[in-house]
Image (cartoon, rainbow, N blue to C red; front, side, top):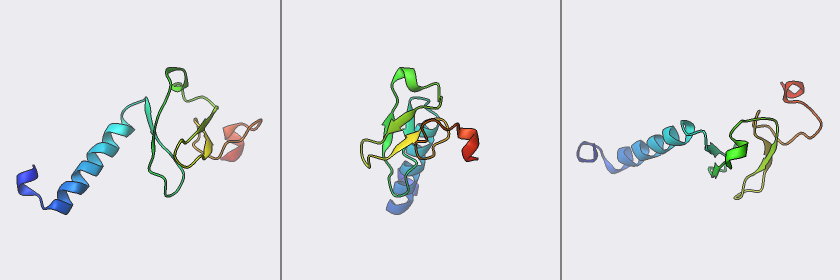
Length: 81
């Protein structure tokens, strides 16, 4: 693939491949905060995607693992929709 793509096309290809890998791995999650592209590695017990808080180690945003909204203690995700 590298031989037929320009440098910018190849960089975009690698970015899309990485995004695909993260999206399809249940242990990995992109931080939902705008302008943060950090990938979080979920502990085994958090892979269930229940309503629980998780904090991005890069931007320090705490969000709900289930709905990806800002953390909302004592309020179900359904109330935010």
